[in-house]
Length: 80
Image (cartoon, rainbow, N blue to C red; front, side, top):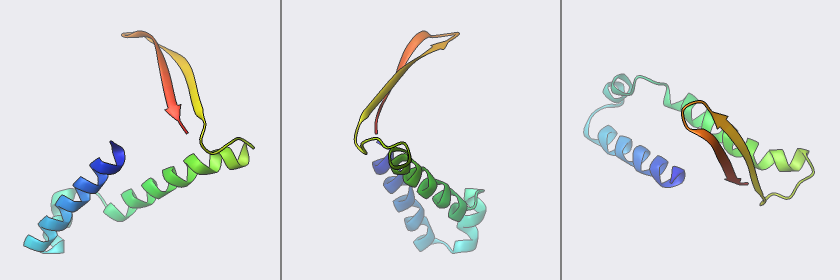
């Protein structure tokens, strides 16, 4: 979901840039998209780098349980 959602979002922004100029689009977004892309790259590198530094396999499944006041005990699953 995250990859497809990101591609659809940036595809829409590219279409708006083609219709308007870049200054207007920067004003409409309200965030510096270069910094947002940098944060995304850092998350991507961190997800793969964690296994490298912890001496774990790259593709493994991790899970834990968290207690939330409103929802109670919930599991957090992540395919790493």
